[in-house]
Length: 324
Ligand code: ADP
Ligand code: F6P
Image (cartoon, rainbow, N blue to C red; front, side, top):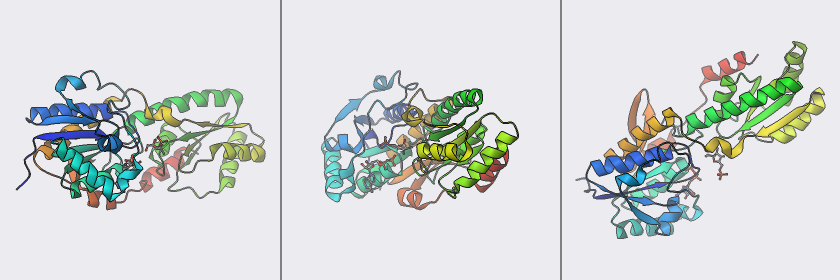
C-alpha cells in the first residue's frame, strides 16, 4: 500500500531557470489544496543538509509567478553524490516530518532525487533547466524565456554587425546541448549555427561561407555558437585573420538565465508543479514529470535518465538550408 503523505518538501537544484517560482507556487497551492502540508527547503540539497527548512503557506507564494530566479535559492552540492550525505538528508527529512519531496532541476538533480527515493523519501522530479537537455520531456521550464532573451540580444547584435559590416559570433548557453543555439540560430536568421552535437570543427567551411556571403553583398554575418563548442573569442581572432573581415565575439552568459518568465514557462511550470504535487500526494515515488506528444506524464527516474535525446535531423537540415 502507498505510504500516506502528510507533509511534502520542495527544493530547487542546479542552475536556476525562469519559471521555477511558478512551479514552486503550483506545488505549494496544489498540495495544500490536497490537504497536505508543505515545507520549502532553501538552496537545494545543500540547504537540506544544513536543515534550512521552513513551513510554506499559500500566501508565501503570492506575487512570485512573474519573477525570475527561485525564491528558494539553489546550489550545486558536490557531497550529495555520496551515500553518507544522501542517508543523512533522508534522516533530516524524517526528522522534519517530510514524507515526500519535489525536486525542480536538471538530470543531475534527478540523481539526487533517485538517491532520496532509495532511502525511503518519496521523491518526484520536475524538469527545470534552460538547456532543454532532458530526454524524457519535450519541454523544460526556463527554455522559452532563455531563447526569447537570447533572440532579442542577437537581433541587437545583428544591427551593429550590419552597420560595421562585421562578422559577429554570439555564444549561447546550453552546457553540452545545442537546443538554445538551434532555436536562436533559426529564429535570428543566423548565417552559421554551431551545435555541439553536429559540429565537425572544420572552421574553413565557416570562413568560406563568410567570404561567399560578403561577395553576394551581405553586410553582416551572424554565427550563433553553442557553449558546448565554446572558444568564441579565439574563433573570432582566427576568422578575422583568415577573412580580413572584422570579427567580434559576444558571450551572452547569465542574462539568459534571468528575467521574468514567458507565458509558456509560467504555464508549463504551473501544470508540471501541480502534476508533481498530485502524484506525490497519491504516494508515487522515484518519478519525473515530462511533457510528450501533447500530454503531461510521469516516468521512472532511471528510465528517464537512460533515455537519449538528439537534435531532430529535419530541424537541423532546415537550419542549414535557411541560413544560406
Ligand atoms: P542539473 O540538475 O541542472 O543537471 P547539476 O548536474 O549541477 O545540475 O546537479 C545539481 C545537483 O544535483 C548537484 O550539485 C548535486 O547536489 C546533485 N547531484 C548531481 N549528480 C548527482 C548524483 N550522481 N548523485 C546524487 N546527487 C547528484
Ligand atoms: O544548466 C544551465 C546552465 O546555465 C548551462 O547552460 C551552463 O552550462 C551552466 O548552467 C552554467 O552553470 P553555473 O551557474 O554553474 O556557471
